[in-house]
Image (cartoon, rainbow, N blue to C red; front, side):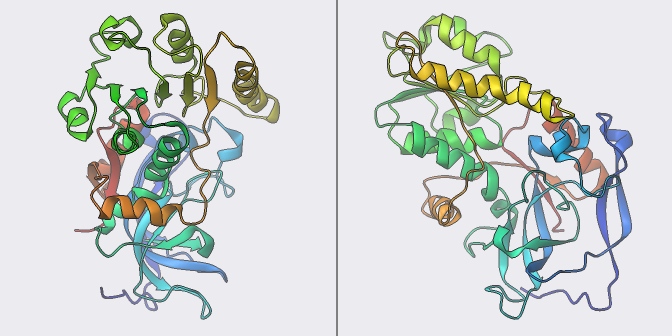
Length: 355
């Protein structure tokens, strides 16, 4: 792939967020002449091919969590997980111009991805597979990794599993990986029945028409060993306990979302009130014999080799990538943020910079 020469190019196209808030139409705009980032020592300059969106992008835009506020304030470039082509790196870097790469955003906030170029710490960059299109590769650094770690850590062969919110970016990967782990029965809540069945689900509950916790057909004489919540929050935990769908002894409720999707924490005390109850719940359920175990899963606990492992799952056909694709236009990006805001993605929402 030809590497773009940026030595005589000073500006780039990007999406800018003018302020924090929830009115996406008024906050996001396309800028045609933003300065190309200057690469610092230890960074890799990447020509972006695609940027994968996630709920975290909407949280940063809303400005509800003080730790996720952009260091330079507004305006800022949103988005974080990208794929692309290396333009420039240190002479001693393991990367060189022309390499196909993926890059994960730097915690605690995704920034700078919705642009033609991005400068990223080398430690956050990995070589992309030449067998997977770059647009699809952008989905692997967060959502696919989070799904893989959850499936490997909590699902045992023969488990009956219920996934709440199966058709989003993480859910589409998770359904497939649970099947690969040997789950005997997988149910999920989604309005996308055919998609879920094609990915390996055995039963699909349309949450728009019925409550999963009132569906007696799900039991079929056996309780669930594992419930993974990707979408609901505290109310799902309460319903799982009281509906008896989840085993009391040995059952696991894995929360991959916070108690409230609309978290607000503008200082350390407010942040404590958000996360301490979840940590306390995880602690006391370990020692309460008549209650399933509550587990708060940190989906971004990435270890060396994880990206290579998840890439192999795609290459060998164990897992396919389901895209909800968008174009790199103001209209396209705004639509993507609205999908994230409403939590109604059908696959992984990805903005493609490729024409």
